[in-house]
Structures are given as C-alpha cells and as structure tokens.
Image (cartoon, rainbow, N blue to C red; front, side, top):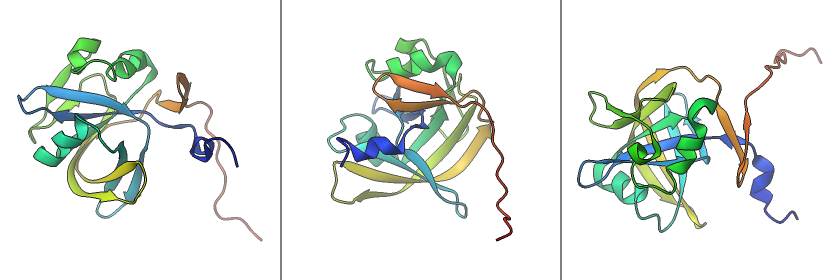
Length: 166
C-alpha cells in the first residue's frame, strides 16, 4: 500500500472556506478536501481536521460559510491565509453579501452555504455538509492541489462521449 493512499486522489480543487469569527471579522482558510454531494438540494462537503480551532468553531456557532474557488492570479495569497488570521492580512479583499457571510472578492466563483450537518465518521477529519443557498461566478483558471507545495492549473479540456456503443 502507498505511504498515503489518499494522495492517489490528487489533484483536488483548492478553495478558501470563509467564516465569521466571534468579533465579526472574517477568517478564510485554504482547503482542498471539498466535493459536491447532491444536485437537489445542492450540497457540498468540506473535510475539516478534528481539533481545528478557527473554522470549525465558527461553522458550529454561525451555521454559515462560503466556499471561494482559488485561481492562479491570487493563489499565493490564498495559501498564505493558512498562516494569517484574516484574509486582509494576506492582501485579499472581503465583501459581504445580503446573507451576512463573507466572500473573497478575488474569487471568480463562490458558494454561500448553511451547515446541514457535521459528521464524525471515525477518521481524523469531520465532514461538514453545507447546503448552497447562494452562488455566483464562473470557475476560471482554477488551481488544484496535489500535495504540500505542489499545485497545478486546470488545463486542456478533453471530451469523452458518455453514450458509447458497446
């Protein structure tokens, strides 16, 4: 078995999950363990490490978060958010939407979510299920995370027919 079998499932979408701290300021942290889990209702899942001291308590307290897609033009600033408390300290701008949840202005696309459930499936991460209540934008020049400091841009589109004659 490989050293880390989960790494075989790379690259993964890179996003900033933004929440509000108790004092009303924005916290934004990069994550790459995020996937859609339902079309109707639209649900997404973010895996957050147990013991997380910022994003997870905010999610539990407010019940809201945004998933902001990271593109290459601001990827370094997005990754820097892991080391600074607020996205403004990484040179990013925050805007509010009418649902009182922070959105990263640089994001070409974002999803505003309400927490539907937080599941403990016995591993070292909790699965946060969010229902998308608002979204905007289009995914362009999106960055994918391979591992560590390795990222890749989405490149060439390949079309494969799903209606194969067997």
